[in-house]
Image (tube, rainbow, N blue to C red; front, side, top):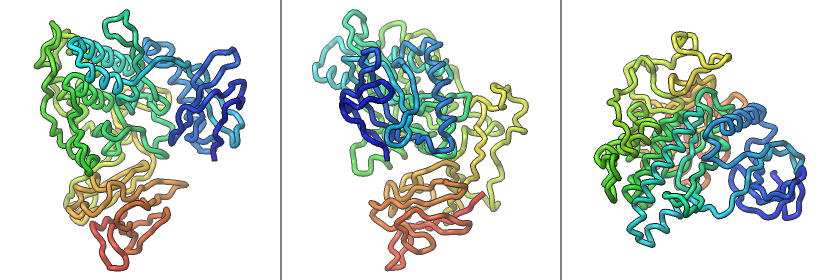
Length: 461
């Protein structure tokens, strides 16, 4: 178990000042560097140095650091000073960042503007929207996908000398991905994201794309320019309502709170934000296109859906409609079938924006009573929203009923102990992680009463 540092503890020359935040994947501190500077010091629980993708993660972080520091993106992120391993309890991975004072996240800044009801705040918000999209476009130019954009991960630094009133920095990029290299945790751990800001690709269990960041930017621009989140209901079933709204594209075009300054056009801006929220990533504008529209320096080009022959983005977890055939006719293309695409790396990996990443992990399929299939290749949380297309009895499932994960070459089901109804494996309630086998049946219900709702048959590819 990770050891929590205390004020005064020294780790490789860094002396801990205070605990800032204890999260699920890392613990953050303020610390003093060997040269006396105050730094932001991060101790990782995940990845552990014992996992088989740890070395790949370290190399991935080195490349991420190189791309940030060698491009204009350095102006929109905290500076990473170094990362290293050290013995602190178990051997542990640490990262050190510059410490910046006086910052607040975008959500708090927006709340402050609304409370003040400052007539000039509209102009300020518009400038922040433009700066945000320039930052994300710069991120994508560096071939980096953030994966977890949300107001809390957009830090603002007050500066009365500039029109925006703030400098902007993107944070929490520890599990951002490189758009031209597969993440080392692919097939071992889920891609990061946050409730109420999940993209359709997150909800489907697919590998995030640059377009996934654009989707989340569409939500944030709704909050900035229209004053509200388009899919926030606030009810008990908010997570399910969010997923249904996102995948159904139910949000109307936003009604802007003010007029965009010339030469930008209100209608074009509203249309662009609405297109950001398309469930089809190929229909969304790029971050650069969106920034041009906000500045009145470009129009969105018409788009058609990605041709079926090219396949959709990485279908690691998707609902497959029932067909008369026992298995879907179309399969994910293999590298050998994609020789006509440009190769970007010696290993032959292709850009995620160009082709789906070929998953090497054997897929797990859960087949519904009507033959519909839920297919996944990575750790996936399974609950009411994701199972709704499989049958009406998904109503008996909790928002998180169980998790499926692949460890040591086999698939496991991990029940949620807090779920209202039992997770049943072949009719028996389970309370601990249990291996899955071909032909097993997963359902929700009550073993003692012989009730099983929405039985799903396990198929292992």
